Image 1 (cartoon, rainbow, N blue to C red):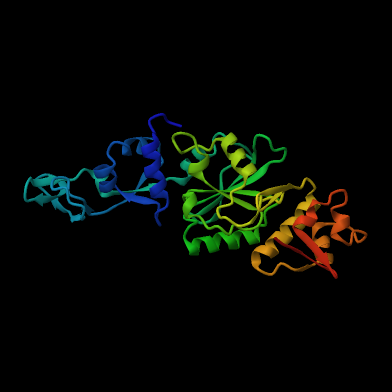
Image 2 (cartoon, rainbow, N blue to C red; image 1 turned 90 degrees about the vertical axis):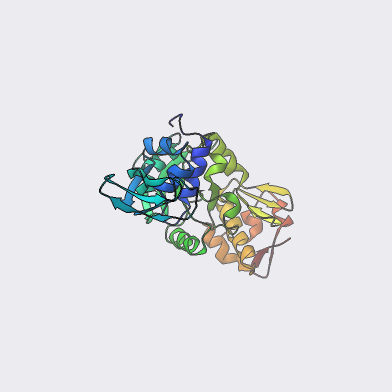
Length: 312
């Protein structure tokens, strides 16, 4: 990460990323962010896209765009200012600068141990990318990582959910979001943990720190005050402050199904279907057998007459 990119430059970049076109006018970039703009341009993260014929005033300190005209005498675009006369506008300020996501994503995940180490795959054009499977400190298995932007927009959130349903998470999937944490949806899709980039990035805000990311995954990314919360991979459930851990993949599958049903408002499921979906053989026909060796599950799960559900 170039040392010239500081926190203010990163903050500007993150705000530009969340705009619909991930772009900013050159006149605004240089006029209001002149100190940090050069670092982002030099790093190749903001690149010229096209040119406009309008700019904010360089002489009168107005916020409204001014239409520019060509001056044969000055051989430049500009405008006439009542206070300063003719003002030429530099070429860079005529451009629209857009985020180069290829360069940005490379820098964002450069510290992660990713496999395969290949170019990100665009899942939703310009909005959602798959960057590979990360090996995080303290976790034995690699975890798939997606990166998304503008996930606070309901229409884009729906596109994310549709994509996640078509490509189900294999136990756990991390979704790094450029959207700030307080703007993210609270009803996260099953099997996904949604984490704001700002919460796990380094001091400059543009590179994910593996230890921070691992800690956030372990703690969960619950964004509301539900009395029952579940880690995205089903490895633990917290019921009114009491945490229950589950090490077996089949038990986790049971917990995920019943938690999802509880969240939906229709908690009761057929026990046989839950156990079959979790991968148990037909000889395991009750939750008691599925959770053999432990009894704490009865503190938040119940089963009667062939049905089971999660309760408070």
